[in-house]
Length: 65
Image (tube, rainbow, N blue to C red):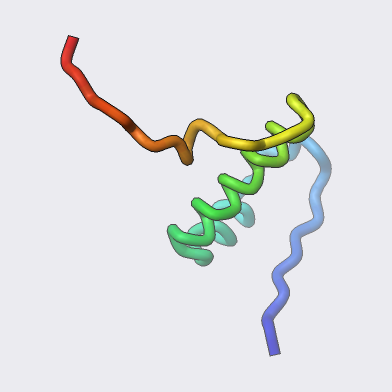
């Protein structure tokens, strides 16, 4: 059975220890995946689509200026 963690607080509460502990327990891959999902959601809301977010672009060339 999957363990569920909950935290009830008011919007704007300064105590963010629950959030920190929760995300640190998830691991780097999940954190990055969820951050990318939030970026895609933002792009869909802003532009109406999320074809190619900046984090997923391929570098064609890299030069020193």
